[in-house]
Amino acid sequence: MSASNERVIIVGAGMGGLASALRLSAQPGLEVLVLDALSGPGGKVGTAHHQGVGFDTGPSVLTMPDVLHELFASADLRLEDHLRLVHPEHLFRYIYRDLSLDVHVDPADTSASIATALGRDAADDFESFLAYCRRIWEAAAPNFVMGPAPSLGGVLKLGFSALAKMRAVDPMRTMKGAIDAQIRSPHLRDLFYRYATYNGSDPRQAPATLNCIAWVELGMGCYGVEGGMRQLARALHLAAEEKGARFAFESPVERIEATSEGFELLVHGERLKADRVIINADVAHLVADLLPPHTPHGLQPDPTPSMSGYTALFKARRRPGAARAAHQVLFPQSAYLEEFVDIFDHNRPPREPTIYLCAQEKAHRAQGWEDHEPIFAMTNAPATATDGNTGVDWQAHTAFITERLIGAGLIDADDTPVWTRTPEDLANTFVGSRGSIYGAASNSKFAAFKRPPNRAPGLNGLYLASGSAHPGGGVPLCLQSGRQAAEALLVDRGC
Image 1 (tube, one colour):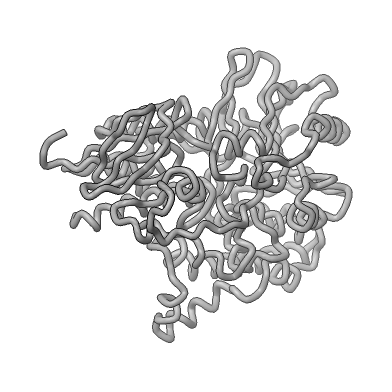
Image 2 (cartoon, rainbow, N blue to C red):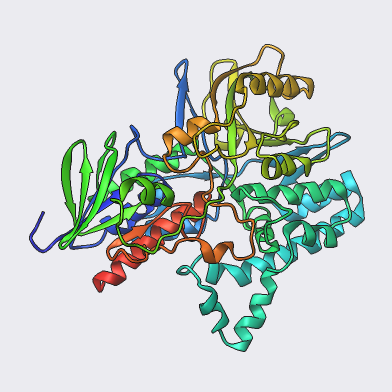
């Protein structure tokens, strides 16, 4: 390292860490080293293999592609030279007890589909509600997503006109309250309730502000990644390396100590020095495990984790054409909201879970087996207890969803799960997360203000880039978290 260079160590090669690495590796005067306990990049955007076929084990859709375009542009690269995004013909198929409903890339096509399945009144409600969701997004995004972490005091100091616009974020109602007030169809209500699960929250408690998630997916666009979501992790990794970042996998960080000259990190018994550190890990893990006891800081991890999930991969006989949509949601026979009662009120997996399916060949143009395709399945579940357990018979859960999918005609009787992952598995892999997928739950109107900022308070030179920090969980927000952390670091360097 040149005497004039600063060393930045990034702890974690998930979406946030990869975004920080790409942004910073393009800057002169910085040496960027990324450490990760796993064997490759991606974090929760993971990969597994069965009989020579690789498949995604994590997120299944990509939204807000402009975040990626801007990230690559910040490193003087073009996204299209590294990654190809794709649009499935039929985006989502929602399967209810008595009907199915197709959601398309174009909102006008979705409205027509709703009119056919549910009637013109439901289509009118859809169009009106989507416009409402758009207004929330346009009011909230500049302050709560695309900019630095907001504070309640900072928001209150905005001018009158800005505060008037902020009313559009609808913070005082719950998601459910706002949906019920504007949507008459029970089928359509369930569809919009489901967007709370996109950040692991409860529509009965989460602020109506989160209804903007529906606009992000239905209005701004929902994409696949050619070859699978794992190609996103690969592209970010290779682009950062191209710009000079170095990566060390299977290198778990055991301790981070602040020193008079910066930081020392303990890795495999070796002490590594850094001028600045970016943490792409759960904030609870940083506080409980990585910082020495009695280290002064202002971090207060939220004790209420977001939802976890049970996931499985089925080796399913390939079906032609539109017989299988890229994404399918099988609602339960019982009332959908009972799922949230089970998870958040009783801390147990739903007794009759909603099952999400992603046909990875259709969604991402991935390659399966000769006569079979990889079908990813997910059900929501609570995070683990603090001791890491759920007390759930996951084999019985696997059998239940397999029978349910066969009964609904979504897989064949001889299609079998070849891979599964439980909340306990997630908790063991991503230390400090308790298996939650999206950081802290957003079941409060003040959730956005309680999320840790990208500059770790009380720890100069240490930055946070993960779903447990600003602006939150999910692929695009984790990418934005990584970029925000990198921008904060550059500002602090005087760049």
